[in-house]
Length: 241
Length: 241
DNA sequence: CGCCGGTTTGAGTCCATTCAAGAGGAGTGG
DNA sequence: CCACTCCTCTTGAATGGACTCAAACCGGCG
Image (cartoon, rainbow over all chains, first blue to last red; front, side, top):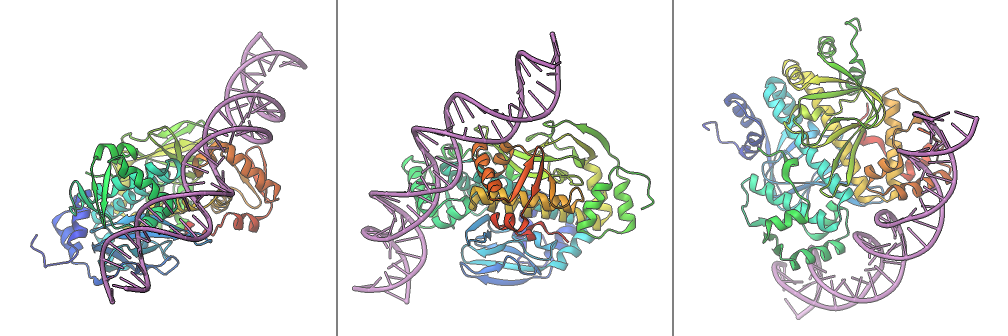
């Protein structure tokens, strides 16, 4: 790839893993204007209800998207890692319907909403790739809905662990059997519709079963098949190549 | 609109309510080839795991999308009504990640996947409208995730009632205070992660509070503000104009 | 060394489930 | 027109998974 050095390479890698892009399309994507930012854990990238002006690409670290109920309970909607176009949907709508927050320290690039719209208008195949990205994001959200709606705590948590492990491998961040584990138990609870207390007890169970081990912010999966079956996990919904 | 009579008008109405389309774009959409089918309640339109070949437009009646766990529990992911492009995401992926099923008798039009891709490639603004449709669909799924993850039974059910009432109004199907009610209690349960027994008891509560009345497959909302507040409902996530 | 964020533990409570069984209503066929 | 069936809604009683509300523990860091 002989285009000028762009920090957007992780985004390209992600898109290319799900769509085929021509040379000129790749170059146009890499040539997108962007601004960089380094975020500390807990900083917000977008706030629910704010006017959407930019789309954020994660260059390193982890982020999550969330919404809150009127009573203040938070639902984490998805977890994102390097290369993800975190709030791509904001290219299409005026007002952000959820927040985006850094889960760990993170490097991000902001691309102006209009630039996304323009490149999509100029390159139909790029439009299709971005659209597909949105579709896959939707598929993951639907699986989470199934997870939260119809699986018990042990299954939910195992399922989440499997998903993030697999996505880390796909993004080339980590490989079997050790993975980054960016979430604290309270966040797992907010993602899975459980309390942190119950997450704690359930994860103790998983460890006791010999399925995994955690040390700090790392996780080791000791029994991949076991964890997969504990989580009723099958990766089709991720639509990986 | 002086284009040849097309049964796809409800789809146009839906798209036009969320995006502005030029005359030629409208005509191209209405000129899409399609095949018609009449479905009986309970018939499947697409099955999870099947190869996606067509995209389905609802011309009348209701449909839902769903996934099942390995244990056979069903999660209803969304409910659709006239004008909805029910499985638009299938234009972008090979294998359907969920099923689509008629909730009532319904008329549908099938549009070939490739035709959707082609029209999107030719008309960037149509691509954008379809993409936006996908984005809004995702927003609704995310609100459902919040609903199922962090609200109690009374809130969940009230929220669902509010959403479907509002969408029926937007689609011009019904108007205050009486609405179509296409779901049986077991389906409400499958949508909200509850058992039909508990749905039953909870809805008795809502009726006892004087919030609504149901007769057969119709529902009357007696206290819109009350139901909205019971469901912690605010319509921003629907991204209506 | 003491604070702080995160994890762990305990005991009591509750919302929702399970497992039946019964009632109502709409359609069907004799 | 009645008997029969199927589907949906309703009700009851017992059970249980997850929650609440603390309090204690633990490791890292200033």
